[in-house]
Length: 386
Ligand SMILES: Nc1ncnc2c1ncn2[C@@H]1O[C@H](COP(=O)(O)OP(=O)(O)OP(=O)(O)O)[C@@H](O)[C@H]1O
Ligand SMILES: [Mg+2]
Image (cartoon, rainbow, N blue to C red; front, side):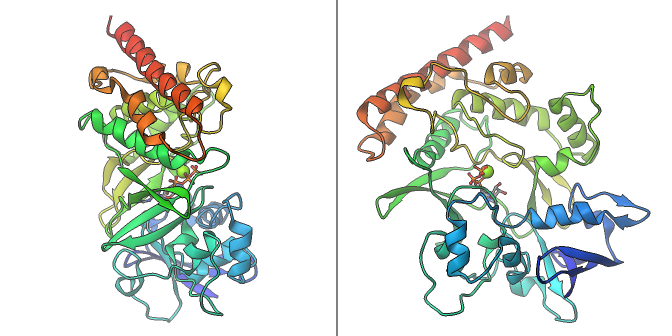
């Protein structure tokens, strides 16, 4: 089947999809190379098809997503990659889509920012059987990343992402809320996405609003990191900064200072390069800066057995293997009012009180361990100021 890869209303290239596998079989006419997805290289005026396929297939729900096998069965679809075509590849995190050749479909009529969408896929991902025999697959959930159970919904006209946690503690949604509270206490020093907590069927979920609008888009740090080849002697951190500078993304070092400090404080173990991104205007291609901090749930010893909390070194990503090493990349703590975090452990204890998945002993240990991170960070910031 032939399509035009579109960036909002701009035709980028023509391509052909293989119907059995959902992969890009060939590339046809080329219209607007500057609008190609970031990280796809061009040689002799032709985009690299392997890289384009990696980008396209990377839009699909990952095979590691909790509940994906059951959901695909409910949706009568053999592979997550085949769901991409069913929603024209549209997403609520960027502005790329595939327009079937000669269909005359306009972006204004189909984009998920301005048009309603089906909840059949989201419900199937939450284990619910679709009400109709042939489910409506026009959903932004087909192009959502990450391994935790999640779905997009419209609440009071706003696009929101609802996301669950993992066994045994189901701590991630609570961690998202704690991270929001922590960043709020820093009074504007950190740009972040606020998360709130809801309970449904006895399970906790976090809810956050879409921070992308119909004229902006999120580009992951991973795609940015791949815009240049990393020389062996250059560190991952410097390479990322170099890529951002070459693209013209403003304020990156400052934003990373804040992100790495927050990740130290909450003992985040999963800040991989798809959990960092930059936002650009999808019409003018002008970069706004790094995205506000999102996805902080994989933190606060969420999968650590209670008696190891605070007793073993916390691993980190994406630049260094431990937080102790990673915070050394921070250029200044001038912006950090550490006193504002006094008693944040108590806030965590309050959030966790009465939680059926976490006992009282774990709550106390988590609360003290968080306060200890704040003390340690205070020491690190003071040492650097001297
Ligand atoms: N508020 C938002 N607005 C726009 N896009 C978002 C938002 N939150 C998440 N996303 C997109 O959805 C993806 C998945 O969300 P998220 O990272 O929160 O899920 P996750 O399952 O916790 O991921 P991981 O596998 O990293 O643990 C993100 O990488 C990002 O591309
Ligand atoms: Mg993520």
